[in-house]
Image 1 (spheres, rainbow, N blue to C red):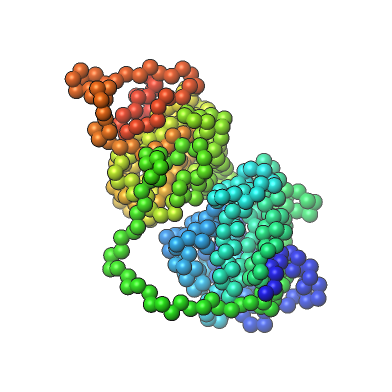
Image 2 (cartoon, rainbow, N blue to C red):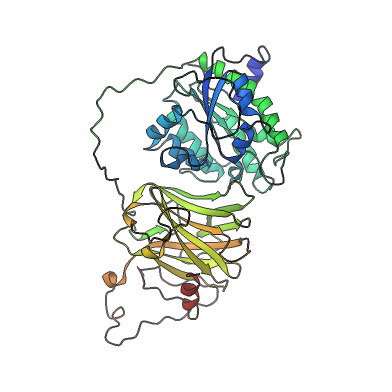
Length: 517
């Protein structure tokens, strides 16, 4: 079998002799993207869709809302593991290979030739160039928005690509940001994709197009050279990318066709009969610490993708979330979230699970929060399949860690879904949770700041876990009291049960009153 090779090197080797050799017959191609890809495809902007058609590619694409489980919503680097290396991959790929619709405004010059999509292009948007860590970090052990986490994801999905020599997978690197903070990391990661990722890959069905490199301009910079006023590439930059991409795609297609394009063997074992009303398999919280969701002291929680930053791609909002030793309630680390959210936009720091979590034995969740700035509004979101619920809270910038407890019924169905305002009733089906930031109601405030989260836990009913005279208040009628911590000191114990929290004196009413706003 042919050794894999960078699409850029392919261009050097093959295009000089045959710079415009498009496929002889129409080839079906599908592009997974969001806003930057939509602009790149569009007539009158990047012109990619029309130009692909002129080169004998019948183009379809996906965008927000597409596919089973709305998988089209999720195109950040850590999400590629869900697309290409999860239990749902067969379902997603069946839909993707057979998709023929358009989700961007481009002219199709060809008729559908029939059959499945043969070429799979996929791209993350520009927030994915904000990779934390260091440029030379090796692949990690789980996916995340860091150099090592991104390398882990691409190494993982390459194993799936190896099983599908009948498909050509084109990785399009994420476009650059205007902010140079993480630019060196982005450049180093994309160079790794081009020059190292495929070094030992035996197939000919994977190639990399360095969209990032094109959009950083001719002078070797690491930030967006063709801006629009935000981080979306301009029409000029998008058209330049089209000009460079088409001959490289043609070269990659010919390289693939000259190698192994065999269809994977068919499994002739009969499929088990489907249940009429299948019940999703449910997984409890980690057995080692059944109440802890994440204390941020080690790796990502078992069975999760780790904490990932998301934002409205149509805005210039920014958010990063990662563990840090700058601040901690208990232990030595916490989750640090830096955010700068455009007015009427949103951003979130999400924890998603491989499989639904069964938290039905618990009454809600508890956590500690520390805000750098005064009056910090935030949301806590809960997700089940196809449904979203939100709780709104506030943190006072008081120099103290503040404890929060949220019962299940305090999470309300979001306004843009059916049954808006309905309380959450499915703790046995939790697929993820998030800390989010958006414009508070009845304000003109664009959220910006830093918040730390620590000791995120599940809470049992206090009546079920209370033991000993300290917990029994019936005889005296008095609740146990606690001295407030000194400024900046941690609260001295983790959250044992929902409803059993003792906040710093004077803050309890504020924290639990403000959250109702």
